[in-house]
Image 1 (cartoon, rainbow, N blue to C red):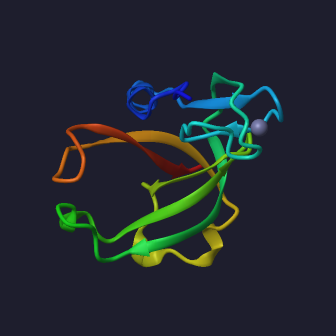
Image 2: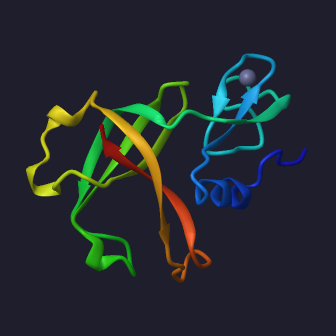
Image 3: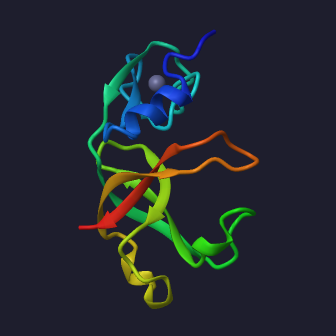
Length: 135
Ligand SMILES: [Zn+2]
């Protein structure tokens, strides 16, 4: 079995503003970020598709103790977002003040963009990661 879409290629496309996913020809589910098989049915008949960068916040948390190397970014909000086409992905919310966030942001519409994170001791340099802004 092989990866149809490598994580590094997914990340590179994201850095150019394109969100790529894998559409399953067996069940039509879209998997994002890329995995070896369809996350719904485990099928391997996958094709690379561009995914719409809109969705709704499913849940979130405010991170006040950041991982090693990112200490000066805290506090920040990390959310789980359900994209309009179905897949759930995680990313930080960029335009909401963490100290003023309430449960009211759950269900709100967001637009996906990206941010480049420099490398650290756990990941090689400059990787694009999903970031959301409230619409
Ligand atoms: Zn499937």
